[in-house]
Amino acid sequence: MRTLELGTPGSLRDRLSALVLAGTKTATATLLAEYAEEEEALETPGEVLALLDSHGTVLAELRVTAVTTVPFGEVPWSFAEAEGEGYTDVAHWRRVHADYWQDSEGRVVTDDTPVVCLHFTRATPASD
Image (cartoon, rainbow, N blue to C red; front, side, top):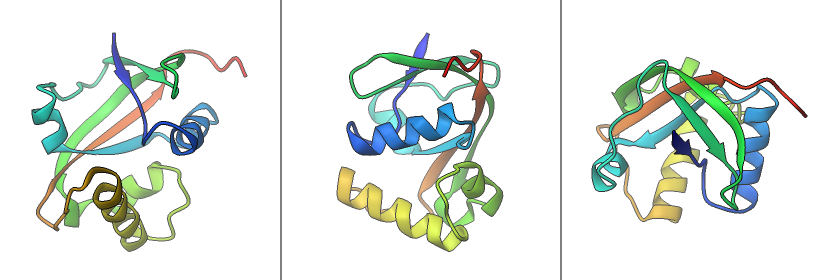
């Protein structure tokens, strides 16, 4: 089973994972370039992923419901809202993500940068 680790280890990953466990976060974005660098195939609808915490512990299993690749400047509000992180509009989502990729990964993102938009649901029942 493939794994999914959200954000960077520590408080960010803890916060994002808690949003998934609460059912608030049902989507996440990754730069397409990261898949190529890691020689990783895109997820496919129906695939089950193990959500990991900062220590590599499985928190839940997630079922992929949709995967699309779109230019950063065309990510729709419906996706930004599904990320469940409290964005006020798609421009807010874009600012936060561009800053994250720049500050955490040293990547400059333009409106043309391909972004993988992954949607999921919990495949395991909530035990919390």
